[in-house]
Image 1 (tube, rainbow, N blue to C red):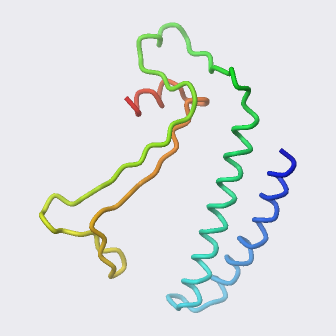
Image 2: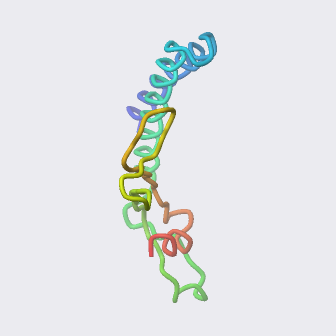
Length: 125
């Protein structure tokens, strides 16, 4: 855990610096875009490390208690990663994001059954 905490702490300075750089740049400039890209990368790295830390804190045999009246509903006991891909219904239609066309959009979600086993189970089901 200590190593992960040190890695998270080391990631926060580049994140803070990149956010400051983006604020100091002209709106819409290449410098702002570059600073924001660096900030997003640092944010993702910190988030990934925090997720690993959280997972290490949960005992291997831990099960969130669920009231018996919900036993007939789907339940997610741990975490699940769900990737959704979206395509437009029209043949050849693409997503236009800031002038760049993409044939599909992806969304990756981590569904947490530790904190919401019934909601997570219903969503994944």
